[in-house]
Length: 486
Image 1 (cartoon, rainbow, N blue to C red):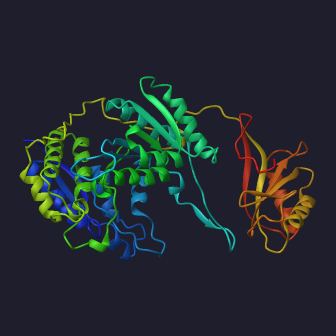
Image 2 (image 1 turned 30 degrees about the horizontal axis):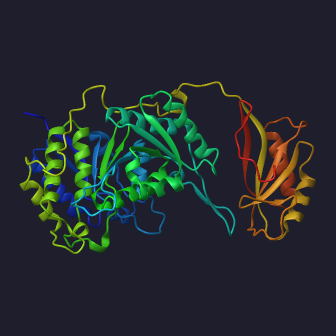
Image 3 (image 1 turned 45 degrees about the horizontal axis):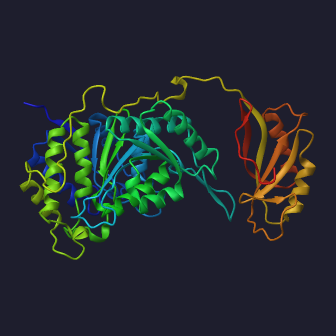
């Protein structure tokens, strides 16, 4: 007798309990060898005083079972509540978000009947690091973090996924024509790693036209890899053009733990009505079954789901005004068709993932344990950010020139990224947040003491410094963007 695999299950909020009950019923009747452990997460936990939305007991279950089937959850508005999805992904190192997008024409209406693309989304960094500050009464900032190891992990995963799933092309999306360092690093790493996979066709698109192409000619893509925020947006676009966001499942893969879910939210407006489409979570569960070594069950469920569509049985979001069934009725229709094959769609066959075939790329989680490369890091200057709502651009520039001292030269002042000193335009709209770039001169010792002395002089001049950002060169290459006019 096969030993049942323990998995952690959360029914979530909104429509979550309804679609999870439907999914679990299908898993039960399909013969899935699983033993669910139920945990509470989401709105109820948030409102109990746990700002992360998850308890210590729930963390213990996740770390022990290492497999998580999760329904959508609701994050209360305001109150400093953190996104639980982001917390789980980052805490457990679930760096790869895999989102398949397939058209089910002619049974699910779509203008794009030939879509079969997979979006591989980086899951841990980018703007989703969630590092935000209000720096002045008028200005807030969000830090965009792109790392070399984070980029290497997700890009290599995309190529390995393509090879192991007989995919022919991997496309990279970025915005490195504007964000030359952050998105530039992601694109650079993509180019480096692509050379190791000469059998795979590669291409790069700027994110805005790339997403436009997904909406217009999605059949041109196969596997697409991109940073976190772009991937979140692009995968919803891709899912919607296939017929409905409600159809798409998602896998979140790490070195040790994996989470499976629908890509849609908790839809509280239809909660309790029994009309939600469970298909997204069903597809998440299918991906889970393949992951835990039960491909035969995954095959049985997927083909029964396809047969259900062929037989014209739809929930309301797919029927779009036509005859429809409720959440549990849809699940029961799938159960009735377990063991049957679709006739219009090609039957799905999931194969057992043998040892060595699974896409698994382990990176040491601690920086000190990873292989080091010799990099010479040299201080080159400092950006001093100041709060100023009393001086004009020229007045601020002249005041800062006087305190630059022999170690620094004030080379430019920008406001929201636009040069305002020297030789700024009076038409430029400014806020109270100013970036003042000081470049080190030959008289400097090129260490932090120079910066400390500069800040002392800035303070004595009555100018309010709100933050600094050191400027470095790495192996002689500039590690910061040039200010306009430099």
